[in-house]
Image (cartoon, rainbow, N blue to C red; front, side):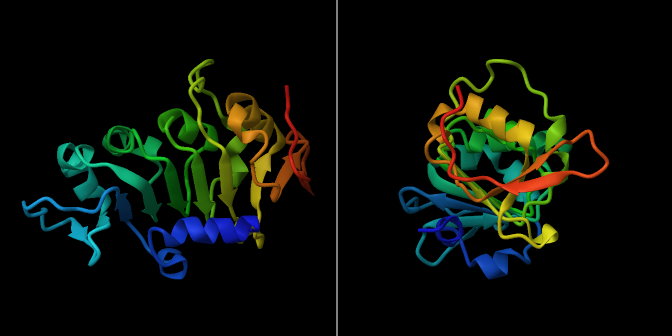
Length: 215
């Protein structure tokens, strides 16, 4: 499968990619296993017809942190949501509820990539669908050693704002990501545009070939 096909498949586990591209304030959690509890869910959390997905807004997500944290999920999607760092209760709730989630999809992503792998160490697949943060990835700063348990194997995404079906990364971000996530070295998507010479008045872009290990 191409990176675009892999990305679409990951998104389809949680919803329709085309509809999600136009969604705002939407969080979808894919339950594993299906919801079988007899008690009723709060009115602001909706259960899909197959009892496999919960959907809600950011306020409900924060409000029902305890309830959501007691369930297990195979994937999570945030569409048209605030950056986690811009709202502490949202970040803390996400870290608690998604502590064991292996797949994370962000539609209209506003978060730094390195921050995401730090906050969600159990995640092995990150999808940045309609990434909005590409231009700011050179100002990342996290504590050394904070991603020793990083499990990320696959990073997928696109940047329609740049007219591109590829994910744009600063060269320093890509190198940092590979150093922090050893499992990603062999499986990271080859379809990246990496921006070089960030100190120059104009950044130069290049399509990265299949990635090799960086020691």
